[in-house]
Image (cartoon, rainbow, N blue to C red; front, side, top):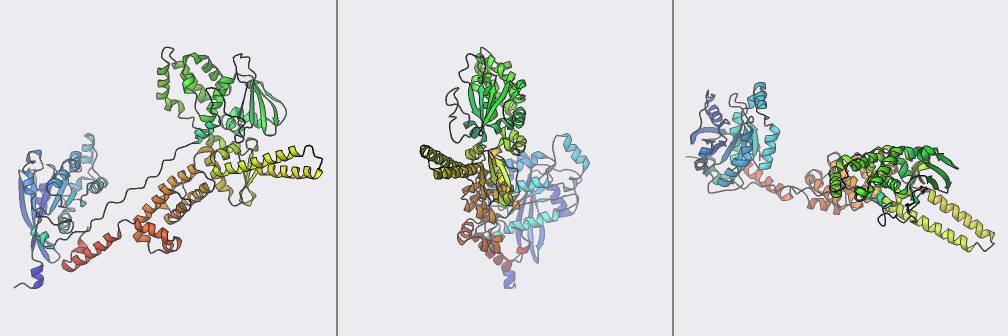
Length: 637
């Protein structure tokens, strides 16, 4: 008579079905496993055959019914007749025959899911002994194919929701016994729920295994779009077709006045304002001209221009060239573009020729190439076609004239010379950096407000001077003189002694180029804080994206803290998403408990993955099976 334990755990049987394309090695696996012999020739399986083999799991015996099926398309209708009451499918493919691997997703998984949606599948790559066989690798190379790698097999397993992936050889029996042992474990433990088709063993002992929910999707990080061309272009954009923007604007900080003295009678405009640093960073000739000038009149006959004078910060230059073609050069300097609509019109061929001539004069090779190409393509009968062709060749034309590329190359040279700047930034330790007011004002909310305030103070001093013009009070004159000096000092220097020169220079590099080469996490976190302080949204966005790329190498908790402080929603969401996946590892750490507030800890806890309930369910599941079967430690679920 059986005791209670024997009654509770009788010997049982499991049904294992081999599936996969014809010729991948299913029958060889079964023969080699059951007889320890490798078949000398290929015998295709006609319908389905099965053999029973006893397998011991600890001190218990399982009768394993091994079913072989035909993989050919001819047996498509007959094959499913062998599927009822299946406990585990072993899906085989030949790693040297790409189609058998592709059919896993295209044919086999849809078929198995249709007939037995709740039965686990073990994916097996056969012919493991040939993976390093040079003759076999050469043979498949001649077919234009590559061997399916282990990584591809694992990736396929994860993508299709297959229970596990293994490799074996029927010839050498490497991994062969492990395939069938693991298949038994999967049949016992991996089945998600009871079904009418399940075996007697599973009806008796199987329980619902906790299923981990899908990982939440990665939060969206907004794309960083460069705005420097747009913002510099706004300094130069026309109000109408050929008119120039308001040059009297206080925040444009022009320091060059170009006066044209051409003999062209049609010329309607004879002067234009611009910026020294723009011209110098875009063109080496203008850099040398400004660098050479000290004071007084200086002629440059080879370039048809002369510097007449410098009053305060404004340099006046006389140019004996036509205004319109030179204005196109300036537009190119500011935006990296040309007036496409206008220059593709056939009546503007003379203008194009002059732009080419001026480009040659000032050695502006890229602009010369662009305009020369347009001139060669202009079709008098079909202007639209020329414009279309130009747009189609946009990559060819514009690929190397990005402001960023030019600025990165020339920026250090220009900003190391005070001739090309109009503001000095005093940093920690009285170290200084130089910059341009127009860039700081245009691209930073902090500096814009600062210069606006200085400008208002300057206006107040001027108003006070006017009031005192008719008064002979020496005290007032002294007061005005002192105030004037203070305002001038404020406008010439900015004191940022809480910040190191290193970080101020990084901020300046971004303001001038829309670019940062930094990928160090600590530096990026500090730049994040600075971008918030100086009100530079694009730098905040760029640092956030760079930080997101470095999440595996950094202190997420610190980044999360900073993102909340600067109210960067996308980065905060990204940090919570990453910390939520690590919550069960970090929740008891000192840094998590001491560095984060309770509110911040709760935000991460609410977004933890997998959820707490899954851990509780898995613990209960382990406990139950540990008591009943003693097989849990061998199972991989």
